[in-house]
Amino acid sequence: MNKLYITVAVMLACLSAPLALQAAGPCMPTKKCEPPPCEFFEQIKMKQAVKRLFSKPKVRQQLIRQAGGDNAEAARLLNEFVEKKAAKLGKKLRCPWKNPLPPPGFETNPSCEIIAKLSTGDETMNRESALSKLDTCSEFIEAAYDHEQVHKDICFKTNSVERANEGITVYAAEERAGYTQELKSLRASLEQFWYSCSAESSAETARQIAAAGISVLKSKTPKSRAKNAPPVKGN
Ligand SMILES: [Zn+2]
Image (cartoon, rainbow, N blue to C red; front, side, top):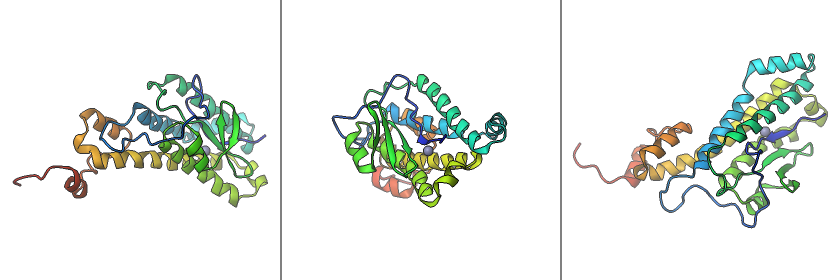
């Protein structure tokens, strides 16, 4: 039985991602410095939470025991454990997730293709077709494909028997690497926003940006100040 190399979609419970009538577009404000949508911050929070699930040595030890020492089976159990926990997280969402809609889950199959898990079924999709077919934040899709690329690269390098028998520690490390890339991509979009909009943003937005793991002080570089802030007199 195979485990899945999956980007867990946290919003599973009541929201499913439909194939869209319109393509994905950026959710980060591109013209005016309006605050980023609530969902953007929530997506980062959820991805962090799921990454943390793959980072618990105690859980791994317990699952190895539960699998009777069968390391590949333990990896499959970890996959199951994370999906269950993620579904629970999906019931505690605070943002409306109507606009933007949630992105689907993605997985990389044994042929190293990326599959979108849609309400209408699984569909093989590359990054470009996902961007043109899925009505959600384009940043979410870009980030998810950065995540899946980690699985894809390993999939191409490893033979399928090796991969199917991979133990829990290797599996957990691979997933953590995927979530690291995904978070990096999401945070880069927020950081970019902050570079251009810090001067016009509210304290609440600054707080949210900081909570998402971006240094709000670091962005006050001479470069961004010169571009966005009025010239400082004196000093
Ligand atoms: Zn993954």
